[in-house]
Structure formats: structure tokens, C-alpha cells
Image (cartoon, rainbow, N blue to C red):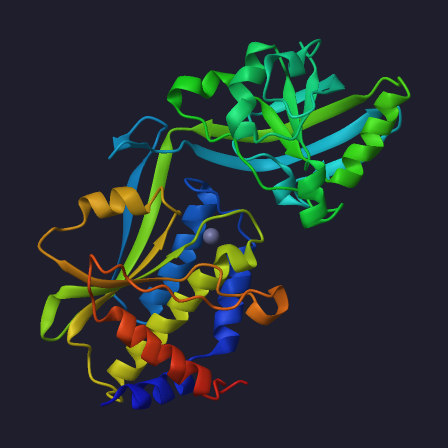
Length: 371
Ligand SMILES: [Zn+2]
């Protein structure tokens, strides 16, 4: 059977509706690496694989902020239940609520319930930025992960991140940035609570500060940081002739809700791919692959590293296809698909194959059964 036939059959089998339903389910979960919601997302995919009779395994690795592999330290588990940032003075106003906007809470924020005055610490990456900040909440533009220890040394109670003017130009006045503390065991005690607000919200607060008005906010965070697990889900279609030679499909399942593009899209796509391939093989419309196809749903980096470490070394990985943010339209965002060849130092058939497939796909009237 040639590749043209397989592409035609796969296109007929593939269901956009099923893919979108799964994407929508995954995107409702706040899937931070090592969180209960991430685990829930793996259970959801696992139940679909089980229903289709596809062999799968859920691997567990520590998320304790101290386990080290190849110089990389595992993150710490974090679960968030609710959070809210209220402006209390000079006017009462809700700025961020987790329920409405999960990305407005800095990942790994500690539990908090306090009122404090706000100061503008500018970038917040130098000691002098935090002058007079003791016991207060600091507005910063630097990444919290880079400055939270410095802020803690100056007695800062909480952090509010906002985009710097250049960043605001790039992302717009109403967008907030996603960021986290990413602590490890050694600096865990320096972590505070943090929110991420838009430039528009920052400018309103700055106006009050410029008018010498006292600005008070209320931080409420119901979350916990703890030793937990990272989960990597893998499913396999075994090769009929060379089972130890493998092609791997990988998608990172993590990220804040909704994260529909990054990366519920890649996760739901490889799920629909294995379901389609499995169904075509079971119904004998295509032969079983000669080599093993392995599908992985991982917490980005943090799950790939321990998984690779434990991966059996008697197997040969022939190729890896990573599906990351496949849900966007390149023509809308103005970024063409770029294909890079393997370097000359690691010659492979892959560059010839990918060029051939890219030309095929470009010429192919791709439409699934449901349009
Ligand atoms: Zn991503």
C-alpha cells in the first residue's frame, strides 16, 4: 500500500468533530505540570484509548523540586482551587478572578488572604526597585521567576506582573502575560503569591499612585504547592516486523486553561491520529505498521526528560514528530510553515521524506468527512 492510499484512508477516517470535542474537554482543565488537573487530562485521554482497546501506560515521576536528571531539576506540584485580586482603595473593583481568567494568577502562587498597600517597583530586578516595599505588594514587569527571591529579601508580600510598554505594544493593552515562579526546594520559602494584570489595569493603578492616593489590594489565593507527581501517558501500536524500531508522536498536554492552541490542539490531534490508525488497522483497511508507533502525552520538558531517562535503550528511535500548537491558522497570524532539515552531521532520509510529504499535503484537497 502506498502513501497516497494511506493519506486518502486516513483523511476519510479522521474526525474533525471528535478532535474538536476532545480539544474542548482538555482545554477546560488548568493543566499545569504536576497538577491534579493535568492528571485528570491524562485520565480523560486514557479512557478514550481504553474504549478503543489501545494499549497504554501512565508513567509517574517525582514533582518535588529536587529530583535531578541530567542537570535538570523537577518542578513542584501545584494545585489551584480559586483566586481573586481586588482593588480595595481608592476604589473597590475586582481586577482578576481565577474562575474568569486562569492565566491571571501567577503559577505556583502560595495560598494567601491579606490586604496590602501597592508600590510601583518598575521592572523589579534590582534591589533599589524595592525601596519601601517591605510588607507591600509590588508591581513589576520582570518575570516573577527571575525576581521572586530578590523581592522576598526585601519583605515583599505579593507581586503583580504587568507588561512593559514594548510588550504591551506587541500583545495589546488588554492582554495579560502567563508566568510562574517555578520554585525548587532550595528557594521554595521565597515564593509569594502573584497576579498578572493588563497594561490597561496597570495604568489605572499608576494614575492613583501618581495622584498620591493610597492604593490597597486584597490578595486571595486558595492553592497549594506540594511534593507530587508528573505524569506521562504513552500508547503504542506495535510494529509487526521490527517492533524495536520506533516512530514517536509527542504532544505536550500541559499549560493553563484554556490553552486550546497551546497545546490541547496537538494533544487532541495525536489522539485522533492513533484512534484513526488503530481503527484502519483493526478493520484491515491498512496493514499493521512494520515498526512500532508510540504516542506520548507529556508535561512539556518536565515529563519528557524523566521519560527519556527510563526509556529502554534496546529500542531505536527512527523519528519523532512533535505536535505543538497545531491549532492556529498560519495565514491569519502571518507565519508560514517552516521546514528545517536535519544537519549534515546527522544525515537522514527524513529531509527528503518531509519535503515530499509537504508537497503532497500542499497539493492535496484536505477535507475530512465532516468538512
Ligand atoms: Zn507549547
